[in-house]
Length: 346
Figure 1 (cartoon, rainbow, N blue to C red):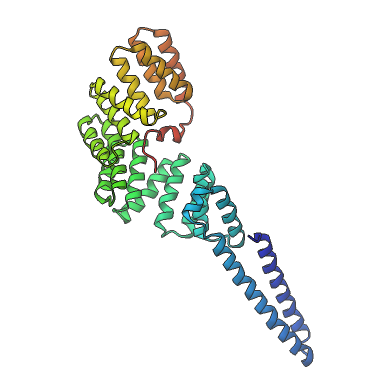
Figure 2: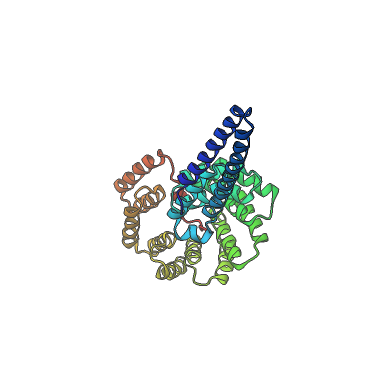
Protein backbone atom coordinates (compact mmCIF):
# COMPACT_ATOMS: atom_id res chain seq x y z
CA UNK A 1 0.00 0.00 0.00
CA UNK A 2 1.21 3.53 -0.82
CA UNK A 3 2.34 5.32 2.35
CA UNK A 4 -0.07 7.91 3.67
CA UNK A 5 2.74 10.49 3.56
CA UNK A 6 2.86 10.13 -0.24
CA UNK A 7 -0.87 10.82 -0.56
CA UNK A 8 -0.62 13.80 1.77
CA UNK A 9 2.40 15.19 -0.11
CA UNK A 10 0.56 14.93 -3.45
CA UNK A 11 -2.47 16.73 -2.05
CA UNK A 12 -0.37 19.45 -0.43
CA UNK A 13 1.68 19.96 -3.60
CA UNK A 14 -1.43 20.23 -5.74
CA UNK A 15 -2.95 22.77 -3.36
CA UNK A 16 0.28 24.80 -3.28
CA UNK A 17 0.59 24.85 -7.07
CA UNK A 18 -3.09 25.81 -7.43
CA UNK A 19 -2.59 28.69 -5.03
CA UNK A 20 0.54 29.77 -6.91
CA UNK A 21 -1.31 29.73 -10.21
CA UNK A 22 -4.08 31.80 -8.69
CA UNK A 23 -1.59 34.41 -7.48
CA UNK A 24 0.09 34.50 -10.89
CA UNK A 25 -3.31 34.98 -12.53
CA UNK A 26 -4.07 37.99 -10.33
CA UNK A 27 -0.65 39.53 -11.01
CA UNK A 28 -0.82 39.00 -14.80
CA UNK A 29 -4.50 39.82 -15.30
CA UNK A 30 -3.61 42.92 -17.37
CA UNK A 31 -1.95 40.75 -20.00
CA UNK A 32 -4.62 39.00 -22.06
CA UNK A 33 -2.24 36.39 -23.52
CA UNK A 34 -0.76 35.49 -20.16
CA UNK A 35 -4.23 35.44 -18.65
CA UNK A 36 -5.40 32.83 -21.15
CA UNK A 37 -2.35 30.67 -20.47
CA UNK A 38 -2.87 30.99 -16.72
CA UNK A 39 -6.55 30.07 -17.08
CA UNK A 40 -5.73 26.86 -18.94
CA UNK A 41 -2.98 26.06 -16.48
CA UNK A 42 -5.29 26.76 -13.56
CA UNK A 43 -7.91 24.44 -15.04
CA UNK A 44 -5.34 21.67 -15.43
CA UNK A 45 -4.02 22.12 -11.89
CA UNK A 46 -7.56 22.18 -10.48
CA UNK A 47 -8.32 18.91 -12.22
CA UNK A 48 -5.07 17.48 -10.84
CA UNK A 49 -5.99 18.61 -7.34
CA UNK A 50 -9.45 17.08 -7.66
CA UNK A 51 -7.86 13.82 -8.77
CA UNK A 52 -5.56 13.78 -5.72
CA UNK A 53 -8.55 14.37 -3.44
CA UNK A 54 -10.49 11.55 -5.10
CA UNK A 55 -7.45 9.27 -4.89
CA UNK A 56 -7.10 10.20 -1.24
CA UNK A 57 -10.74 9.21 -0.64
CA UNK A 58 -10.17 5.91 -2.43
CA UNK A 59 -7.00 5.36 -0.42
CA UNK A 60 -8.82 5.93 2.87
CA UNK A 61 -11.67 3.69 1.77
CA UNK A 62 -9.29 0.86 0.88
CA UNK A 63 -7.15 1.28 4.00
CA UNK A 64 -10.23 1.42 6.24
CA UNK A 65 -12.01 -1.52 4.58
CA UNK A 66 -10.34 -4.02 6.91
CA UNK A 67 -12.86 -6.74 7.71
CA UNK A 68 -13.65 -8.10 11.16
CA UNK A 69 -12.01 -11.39 10.16
CA UNK A 70 -8.82 -9.58 9.11
CA UNK A 71 -8.75 -7.64 12.38
CA UNK A 72 -9.14 -10.87 14.36
CA UNK A 73 -6.50 -12.69 12.30
CA UNK A 74 -3.87 -9.94 12.34
CA UNK A 75 -4.74 -6.97 14.58
CA UNK A 76 -1.23 -5.46 14.32
CA UNK A 77 -1.45 -5.17 10.53
CA UNK A 78 -4.97 -3.80 10.81
CA UNK A 79 -3.74 -1.10 13.20
CA UNK A 80 -0.99 -0.14 10.75
CA UNK A 81 -3.39 0.10 7.79
CA UNK A 82 -6.01 2.00 9.76
CA UNK A 83 -3.41 4.40 11.16
CA UNK A 84 -2.33 5.20 7.58
CA UNK A 85 -5.94 5.91 6.67
CA UNK A 86 -6.34 8.24 9.65
CA UNK A 87 -3.32 10.28 8.55
CA UNK A 88 -5.19 11.06 5.33
CA UNK A 89 -8.63 11.44 6.94
CA UNK A 90 -8.27 12.21 10.68
CA UNK A 91 -12.03 12.57 11.25
CA UNK A 92 -13.24 9.17 10.03
CA UNK A 93 -15.47 7.68 12.74
CA UNK A 94 -15.53 4.22 11.16
CA UNK A 95 -11.73 4.10 10.96
CA UNK A 96 -11.33 5.05 14.61
CA UNK A 97 -13.96 2.43 15.46
CA UNK A 98 -12.15 -0.35 13.59
CA UNK A 99 -8.76 0.62 15.00
CA UNK A 100 -10.25 0.62 18.49
CA UNK A 101 -11.47 -2.94 17.93
CA UNK A 102 -8.01 -3.91 16.66
CA UNK A 103 -6.39 -2.39 19.76
CA UNK A 104 -8.74 -4.42 21.98
CA UNK A 105 -7.74 -7.55 20.07
CA UNK A 106 -4.09 -6.59 20.62
CA UNK A 107 -4.67 -6.29 24.38
CA UNK A 108 -4.01 -2.53 24.36
CA UNK A 109 -7.02 -1.25 26.34
CA UNK A 110 -5.89 2.36 26.73
CA UNK A 111 -5.48 2.98 22.99
CA UNK A 112 -8.72 1.09 22.33
CA UNK A 113 -10.54 3.31 24.82
CA UNK A 114 -9.13 6.48 23.22
CA UNK A 115 -10.04 5.43 19.67
CA UNK A 116 -13.54 4.25 20.53
CA UNK A 117 -14.19 7.43 22.52
CA UNK A 118 -13.20 9.39 19.41
CA UNK A 119 -15.45 7.23 17.23
CA UNK A 120 -18.43 7.94 19.50
CA UNK A 121 -17.70 11.68 19.58
CA UNK A 122 -17.59 11.77 15.75
CA UNK A 123 -20.69 9.58 15.36
CA UNK A 124 -22.88 9.82 18.49
CA UNK A 125 -25.70 7.83 16.94
CA UNK A 126 -23.58 4.75 16.21
CA UNK A 127 -24.92 2.18 18.71
CA UNK A 128 -22.26 -0.40 17.85
CA UNK A 129 -19.52 2.15 18.55
CA UNK A 130 -21.16 3.06 21.87
CA UNK A 131 -21.34 -0.60 22.88
CA UNK A 132 -17.69 -1.21 22.05
CA UNK A 133 -16.72 2.01 23.83
CA UNK A 134 -18.50 0.76 26.95
CA UNK A 135 -16.47 -2.46 26.76
CA UNK A 136 -13.27 -0.44 26.38
CA UNK A 137 -14.23 1.77 29.35
CA UNK A 138 -14.73 -1.41 31.36
CA UNK A 139 -11.33 -2.71 30.24
CA UNK A 140 -9.56 0.37 31.64
CA UNK A 141 -11.54 0.28 34.88
CA UNK A 142 -14.01 3.12 34.22
CA UNK A 143 -17.01 1.21 35.56
CA UNK A 144 -19.26 4.25 35.99
CA UNK A 145 -18.53 5.47 32.48
CA UNK A 146 -19.18 2.01 31.06
CA UNK A 147 -22.46 1.73 32.96
CA UNK A 148 -23.60 5.20 31.83
CA UNK A 149 -22.87 4.37 28.19
CA UNK A 150 -24.68 1.04 28.40
CA UNK A 151 -27.71 2.56 30.14
CA UNK A 152 -28.08 5.04 27.29
CA UNK A 153 -28.01 2.19 24.78
CA UNK A 154 -30.48 -0.05 26.60
CA UNK A 155 -32.85 2.83 27.30
CA UNK A 156 -32.93 3.62 23.60
CA UNK A 157 -32.96 -0.01 22.50
CA UNK A 158 -34.14 -2.42 25.23
CA UNK A 159 -33.66 -5.36 22.83
CA UNK A 160 -29.91 -4.85 22.36
CA UNK A 161 -28.60 -8.25 23.48
CA UNK A 162 -24.92 -7.31 23.53
CA UNK A 163 -25.49 -4.13 25.54
CA UNK A 164 -27.75 -5.90 28.05
CA UNK A 165 -25.11 -8.55 28.68
CA UNK A 166 -22.31 -6.02 29.04
CA UNK A 167 -24.44 -3.96 31.42
CA UNK A 168 -25.09 -7.07 33.49
CA UNK A 169 -21.35 -7.74 33.75
CA UNK A 170 -20.67 -4.16 34.85
CA UNK A 171 -23.44 -4.41 37.46
CA UNK A 172 -21.83 -7.57 38.88
CA UNK A 173 -18.44 -5.87 39.11
CA UNK A 174 -20.09 -2.96 40.94
CA UNK A 175 -21.78 -5.36 43.36
CA UNK A 176 -25.29 -4.80 41.99
CA UNK A 177 -26.30 -8.45 41.69
CA UNK A 178 -30.07 -7.88 41.56
CA UNK A 179 -29.68 -5.34 38.74
CA UNK A 180 -27.41 -7.72 36.84
CA UNK A 181 -29.96 -10.54 37.14
CA UNK A 182 -32.59 -8.27 35.57
CA UNK A 183 -30.21 -7.37 32.73
CA UNK A 184 -29.39 -11.00 31.96
CA UNK A 185 -33.07 -11.98 32.17
CA UNK A 186 -33.86 -9.24 29.65
CA UNK A 187 -31.01 -10.49 27.45
CA UNK A 188 -32.40 -14.01 27.63
CA UNK A 189 -35.83 -12.79 26.49
CA UNK A 190 -34.39 -11.13 23.35
CA UNK A 191 -31.83 -13.86 22.60
CA UNK A 192 -32.42 -15.07 19.05
CA UNK A 193 -29.97 -17.97 18.75
CA UNK A 194 -28.65 -20.91 20.73
CA UNK A 195 -25.30 -19.13 21.07
CA UNK A 196 -26.85 -16.03 22.63
CA UNK A 197 -29.18 -18.07 24.85
CA UNK A 198 -26.18 -20.05 26.09
CA UNK A 199 -24.34 -16.83 27.00
CA UNK A 200 -27.38 -15.42 28.83
CA UNK A 201 -27.95 -18.62 30.83
CA UNK A 202 -24.29 -18.84 31.84
CA UNK A 203 -24.09 -15.17 32.78
CA UNK A 204 -27.26 -15.11 34.86
CA UNK A 205 -26.00 -18.07 36.89
CA UNK A 206 -23.18 -15.97 38.39
CA UNK A 207 -25.23 -13.31 40.25
CA UNK A 208 -27.84 -15.92 41.19
CA UNK A 209 -25.08 -17.90 42.89
CA UNK A 210 -23.82 -14.76 44.65
CA UNK A 211 -27.35 -14.20 45.94
CA UNK A 212 -27.43 -17.84 47.11
CA UNK A 213 -30.25 -18.85 44.78
CA UNK A 214 -28.55 -22.16 44.09
CA UNK A 215 -31.54 -24.03 42.66
CA UNK A 216 -32.18 -21.23 40.15
CA UNK A 217 -28.47 -21.19 39.35
CA UNK A 218 -28.51 -24.90 38.57
CA UNK A 219 -31.67 -24.55 36.47
CA UNK A 220 -30.01 -21.95 34.22
CA UNK A 221 -26.79 -23.95 33.98
CA UNK A 222 -28.75 -27.05 33.00
CA UNK A 223 -30.43 -25.02 30.25
CA UNK A 224 -27.01 -23.83 29.05
CA UNK A 225 -25.60 -27.36 29.02
CA UNK A 226 -28.54 -28.58 26.95
CA UNK A 227 -27.22 -26.23 24.27
CA UNK A 228 -23.53 -27.11 24.76
CA UNK A 229 -23.31 -30.35 26.75
CA UNK A 230 -19.50 -30.41 26.90
CA UNK A 231 -18.83 -26.78 27.65
CA UNK A 232 -16.19 -26.74 30.44
CA UNK A 233 -17.28 -23.35 31.82
CA UNK A 234 -20.89 -24.46 32.21
CA UNK A 235 -19.84 -27.72 33.82
CA UNK A 236 -17.44 -25.90 36.14
CA UNK A 237 -20.10 -23.41 37.20
CA UNK A 238 -22.44 -26.32 37.86
CA UNK A 239 -19.77 -27.95 40.04
CA UNK A 240 -19.44 -24.71 42.03
CA UNK A 241 -23.22 -24.48 42.48
CA UNK A 242 -23.51 -28.06 43.77
CA UNK A 243 -20.60 -27.36 46.10
CA UNK A 244 -22.41 -24.34 47.53
CA UNK A 245 -25.44 -26.57 48.14
CA UNK A 246 -23.23 -28.98 50.10
CA UNK A 247 -23.41 -31.77 47.49
CA UNK A 248 -19.65 -32.22 47.40
CA UNK A 249 -19.45 -35.62 45.73
CA UNK A 250 -21.51 -34.36 42.79
CA UNK A 251 -19.42 -31.17 42.76
CA UNK A 252 -16.19 -33.19 42.58
CA UNK A 253 -17.54 -35.35 39.77
CA UNK A 254 -18.49 -32.29 37.70
CA UNK A 255 -15.25 -30.45 38.47
CA UNK A 256 -13.20 -33.44 37.29
CA UNK A 257 -15.32 -33.70 34.15
CA UNK A 258 -14.75 -30.03 33.37
CA UNK A 259 -11.00 -30.25 34.02
CA UNK A 260 -10.74 -33.26 31.71
CA UNK A 261 -11.85 -30.87 28.93
CA UNK A 262 -9.91 -27.78 30.09
CA UNK A 263 -7.32 -28.44 32.85
CA UNK A 264 -6.60 -24.72 33.29
CA UNK A 265 -10.13 -23.55 34.09
CA UNK A 266 -10.07 -21.73 37.43
CA UNK A 267 -13.76 -22.12 38.30
CA UNK A 268 -13.41 -25.90 38.01
CA UNK A 269 -10.12 -26.03 39.91
CA UNK A 270 -11.66 -24.06 42.77
CA UNK A 271 -14.78 -26.24 42.79
CA UNK A 272 -12.55 -29.33 42.97
CA UNK A 273 -10.49 -27.81 45.82
CA UNK A 274 -13.62 -27.04 47.84
CA UNK A 275 -15.10 -30.50 47.21
CA UNK A 276 -11.87 -32.25 48.24
CA UNK A 277 -11.62 -30.15 51.39
CA UNK A 278 -15.15 -30.91 52.56
CA UNK A 279 -14.85 -34.57 51.61
CA UNK A 280 -11.96 -34.88 54.08
CA UNK A 281 -8.99 -34.69 51.66
CA UNK A 282 -7.84 -31.44 53.18
CA UNK A 283 -4.10 -31.70 52.56
CA UNK A 284 -4.70 -32.39 48.89
CA UNK A 285 -7.15 -29.47 48.68
CA UNK A 286 -4.73 -27.00 50.31
CA UNK A 287 -1.89 -28.17 48.05
CA UNK A 288 -3.97 -27.67 44.89
CA UNK A 289 -5.14 -24.26 46.10
CA UNK A 290 -1.53 -23.28 46.85
CA UNK A 291 -0.58 -24.27 43.30
CA UNK A 292 -3.28 -21.95 41.99
CA UNK A 293 -2.09 -19.11 44.25
CA UNK A 294 1.45 -19.48 42.90
CA UNK A 295 0.02 -18.99 39.42
CA UNK A 296 -2.06 -15.98 40.50
CA UNK A 297 -0.22 -14.41 43.45
CA UNK A 298 -2.22 -11.16 43.31
CA UNK A 299 -5.67 -12.76 43.61
CA UNK A 300 -6.90 -11.83 47.08
CA UNK A 301 -9.94 -14.12 46.89
CA UNK A 302 -7.74 -17.21 46.59
CA UNK A 303 -5.76 -16.24 49.68
CA UNK A 304 -8.95 -15.62 51.64
CA UNK A 305 -10.11 -19.11 50.66
CA UNK A 306 -6.84 -20.64 51.82
CA UNK A 307 -6.86 -18.62 55.05
CA UNK A 308 -10.29 -20.10 55.84
CA UNK A 309 -8.95 -23.58 55.23
CA UNK A 310 -5.91 -22.94 57.42
CA UNK A 311 -8.21 -21.63 60.16
CA UNK A 312 -10.33 -24.78 60.06
CA UNK A 313 -7.10 -26.80 60.24
CA UNK A 314 -6.04 -24.67 63.23
CA UNK A 315 -2.96 -23.38 61.43
CA UNK A 316 -3.46 -19.83 62.68
CA UNK A 317 -0.01 -18.51 61.72
CA UNK A 318 -0.45 -19.53 58.10
CA UNK A 319 -3.96 -18.10 58.06
CA UNK A 320 -2.66 -14.81 59.50
CA UNK A 321 0.08 -14.64 56.84
CA UNK A 322 -2.50 -15.05 54.06
CA UNK A 323 -4.81 -12.40 55.55
CA UNK A 324 -1.90 -9.96 55.91
CA UNK A 325 -1.17 -10.43 52.22
CA UNK A 326 -4.85 -9.93 51.44
CA UNK A 327 -4.80 -6.53 53.16
CA UNK A 328 -1.87 -5.46 50.98
CA UNK A 329 -3.59 -6.68 47.82
CA UNK A 330 -6.89 -5.01 48.71
CA UNK A 331 -5.14 -1.65 49.14
CA UNK A 332 -3.95 -1.78 45.53
CA UNK A 333 -6.01 -0.68 42.52
CA UNK A 334 -8.12 -3.69 41.45
CA UNK A 335 -7.27 -5.27 38.13
CA UNK A 336 -10.35 -5.40 35.90
CA UNK A 337 -9.11 -8.52 34.13
CA UNK A 338 -8.90 -10.32 37.48
CA UNK A 339 -12.35 -9.06 38.47
CA UNK A 340 -13.84 -10.26 35.19
CA UNK A 341 -12.26 -13.70 35.46
CA UNK A 342 -14.96 -16.32 35.74
CA UNK A 343 -17.49 -14.34 33.69
CA UNK A 344 -18.09 -15.67 30.19
CA UNK A 345 -16.16 -13.62 27.63
CA UNK A 346 -17.36 -13.00 24.11
